[in-house]
Image 1 (cartoon, rainbow, N blue to C red):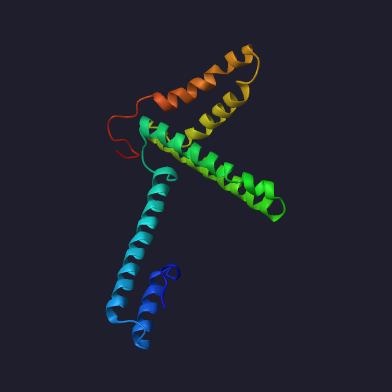
Image 2 (image 1 turned 135 degrees about the vertical axis):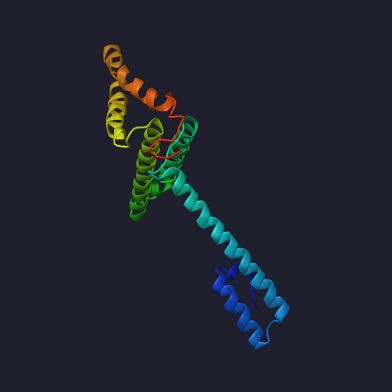
Length: 184
């Protein structure tokens, strides 16, 4: 007989319903119920695919423009997501053995997501400012310099403040009000 836990894909549901009706195990109306469940599962799979597509378009696409507020919010979100993925690797590292490698893979995926996500958001922010995305390279170098130098003695921190100012400029400077070569 059928059990709800056994049904995982649309094709499996359709095949199961057809076999049950053909074998006389189920009446056609029961098969229709399971076919309705299959349609609902299909809708869920389409929604999942759409959500993944939206995530890639919002966080990993290098085309278009990105205003100040979405830039800040999406940077925070991608940072929190990468941190959560990295934290999820801790149990794998504790287990040791083969699981240690799974944890390492988890951290690598989190860092790749963070790197590509921040690069994508920065490029689109530069597009909003009217600059080419290649400017993200020198801003990334400046931000890395600030990240390393702000741990130094006070004189070094003062010397590194222009690096921090570059990051503040990218984040808070208003973008082009009119359409530019990167879109509206």
